[in-house]
Image (cartoon, rainbow, N blue to C red; front, top):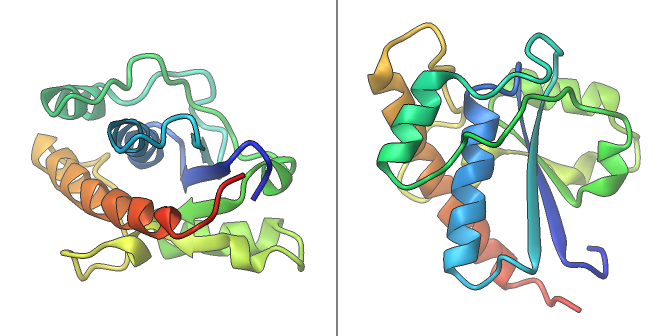
Length: 162
């Protein structure tokens, strides 16, 4: 952990559905819990398909209904420097997890986890990609990310901050 708190990066494929939603959910919940100044969140994609684009409109609509604002976020590709800048990189599915492992340094595998490893109510290990479905898939992703983000916050409360 850095002197400025704890930094977490949420990772999916194109950084327009799952990972920006996770970033927005986590930021809001962390702020509501009084940890907004202590934890830093960002998101990235393993591929650069959508660099510079805003999150999928369906993700924005579903998130806005629950009070999360994705409108200012823009897709970016995972960079080698991210492995140094972030204390924890959270993959949305096993494919992303494998990408992190192959891109990361041998000394950093402890920094990688599946997002759903923090979930309390859901048993799924992966956050499904809602891109090719309807709005209901985005709602389900939000349910899962809210649950996992709460679990992540609980685990961060156990870390002593400087």
